[in-house]
Image (cartoon, rainbow, N blue to C red; front, side):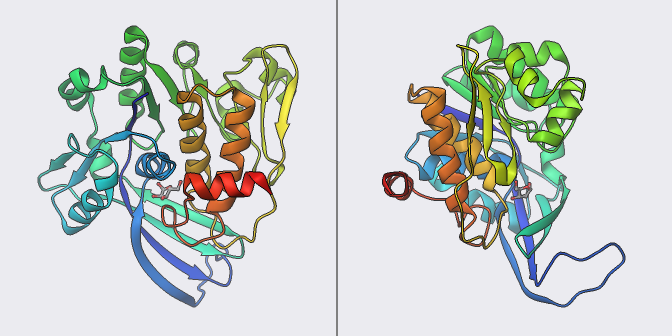
Length: 293
Ligand code: RIB
């Protein structure tokens, strides 16, 4: 099965400090790194590290960050990434400290991933079996891709991060939607309990719950909760991306949702034990070893 990601490519400007600063506070940091990130690119790299054949679609600027980010995507297919003249590559300003982080994204070229770009890659996209999307490119483009993939019968995983409302007709067209609790409330409202909400979308809605793990409702109506694995946390940046990447790989391999989520949960937890969104992502072998423990 061939997987594609249509999404963001960022350079993460990551500062480590003892803790994340309070509003209006100045703290002394201990390091500053410029490393590959972006929810789209992170999910593509997570899949490639787990052995999947994956291609990344999106845009970078014609700056040195763009060059480095393209170089970094060599293991993933990156042939159709557009380099935009006079536009900066996306940047994420990240603070990491005390098992937590804050992130501000300046989209740059990611904000230019538009319908015209999608039209230019449609004949390529059609060749994939599953397309994975996030919310770091214009939402209008995300919905446009979903409409296209739905028409073509291509499976769609929507990771609706960062949080934004999603029209119900778009939810109806995706195969899987994987919000965290906050994103789920924004999309589905807060009238239903988490369990009742999951029951409305069996084996389609997957809600990530941080240190409480990940939940879905099985087709037989049982609520499945996979508790989080205990980790020696260094940096949680990209853990959600690892989960989405690993989940997509396992589903694409034809595994049952329980298997896919168990695997993804362990992969995400392992990714927090090393620094960086992508540098910490585990290989298939590392996940398998951990699962056998
Ligand atoms: O999910 C983590 C990612 O969010 C970071 O890599 C950063 O680029 C932001 O997009």
